[in-house]
Image (cartoon, rainbow, N blue to C red; front, side, top):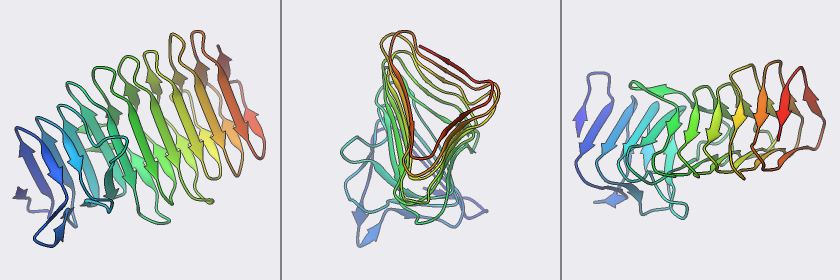
Length: 231
């Protein structure tokens, strides 16, 4: 590990990186940014958050976390990718704060290779998508803002080759602007659920599948302004 002058942490490993507890020290904590690059997989053995930093970049050859054991974070901005195989599975635990999928240390958004899925959730905070989230091949994308007062705001494209797209928010779900497109092919489906509020789409937003179903649900209302919904 190398500590930058800004107080950040950079770790590069040719093989796997296993996050957990060593000598009673749990994970990595930094007042600055954390960049973790692994030639293999990034895994997490404990249930508690392993990475705490201002902004976090995760890059792995064969997966970031797993569906059963996602990487736990406490941060404001996340960028992640897989380069050969595997998915990206992250749970943000900060209570009441917002997590932005953005640009960190030169890496923008979240992407996968070789049919890798994307599953990013907050336990109690809003989720903002400001950079693209493309899943490779039949990889699915699941983005969830947990907590009754949490919103999911999408301002960048989310897509998959043929995988399902699932979006859910505790309160409002907003698709903002022409860049906030949801697209998939084949039999992939698109589901967007605003559990406790409204689902809104601004002008230029496109929601499109090739042959799969599209389901838009809210407890308030669905608002669409010159948007395209095609299945």
